[in-house]
Length: 249
Length: 249
DNA sequence: CGTACGCTTGATAACCCTCAAATCTAGTGG
DNA sequence: CCACTAGATTTGAGGGTTATCAAGCGTACG
Image 1 (cartoon, each protein chain N blue to C red):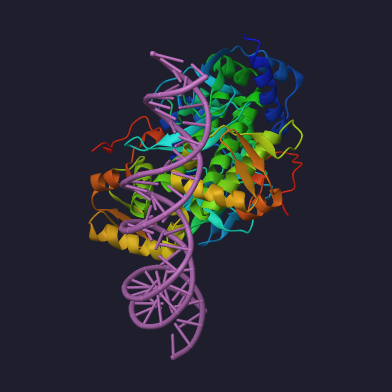
Image 2 (tube, rainbow over the protein chains, first blue to last red; image 1 turned 90 degrees about the vertical axis):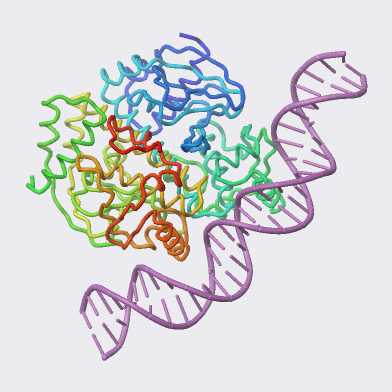
């Protein structure tokens, strides 16, 4: 219902149509989705484990993180969500939260009721497929995260996260190697599975090698092909039909 | 059309209905799915990265692995699939393979054409939702893998994989702490992101501590609550409505 | 019987975690 | 405006964990 959601919804539609074919009627149905905005401060929980939710979270501003937590509560970030991402579209078919969300920076979330999403997914099979497809791509992104943690050492891990975000941020913008990344080194540690102290030392090295500079607010890619090379990055798993960056140097 | 697929399809249906509500009509539609069986030998590729496929793979016997590979071809197993799993149901909405599959042991795969799956998903919204839900649970399982690699050390990582498989294998069987696991130590290394040599030493330690014994064919859980404790395991993310094992010791 | 492959063990080095303390920054209240 | 505080970044030192290199052993298969 809120007007500010329109911008985020347009970004969301852009992501969907980049990957699925939707007609005008379907697009209108998505654009007409009702929503209610909420703002979260850094490190605040957006949805908690075990909770039952009745709305999905569309990121409007800031960065939200999907995380997993062990029995004793230790957290690991599994996926980052940037504006235009429907961070937990999956909750529509799985309202018992198993992938909780937290705000990484100050974050504006537009909450969209499940009934509305279920309604258009039932009415338009093409929308149901595009939502399913979204979940599939999520799984691929998270799978790439497993590859990242399982096979790469610290510098390559961080490089990979930056490469992925550079591509995902690019959508609908001109390919600038500078994008917002309001993430502390401690939080970055929870993304790449490294101790904060080691994150710090690794960033220092990446900066010294003229590959990458982070300042807690913005990411600056100093040498794209160097980063891609270090991370052994390929953008295939993101499944964009068209990608302007060259990822095979 | 092959008869032997019936057993695997029944297992698949059991998994679906454990998590989604489906009517008799829908169940019959699933049971009537056509299929063609193929057998793969250990380490053989089932579907390759970049390939375009027109069928999904239902595991009949053995173990199949979904993996991710880096630009230079290094592989990391992202998820294991046991009999009754539709290993790449996601390919229905994403036919350009981004999550390739390989056989871990000798494996029988029943290939089910996409058109048949798309047809019943379009005809019955409840089926579309249950398929979508399957993708969501896949993502949760893979997310747990990220947690595993990002926060745990070698013994706990292996323990976690075993705990998960014990639960997933349990479906429709009596809760025995012994299940088939035809996986070499080298392959186990590609699951938990460890060097084979270190896998070996870790297994030795787990065996000495009377927690777990693997022989390349079968897994034997010697001390369930000890394993759960070591791995900080919770079965929540698997989203079974009913789980007989006690996972909170 | 030979060969290939997986398992096992030892030694060494690289990587990363942990503890600890100093510096810097941003926000708060006097 | 400045002192104060909490949190983030930075640096050092040490120890634990894991990778790497290498070699010996067992076993399955042709």
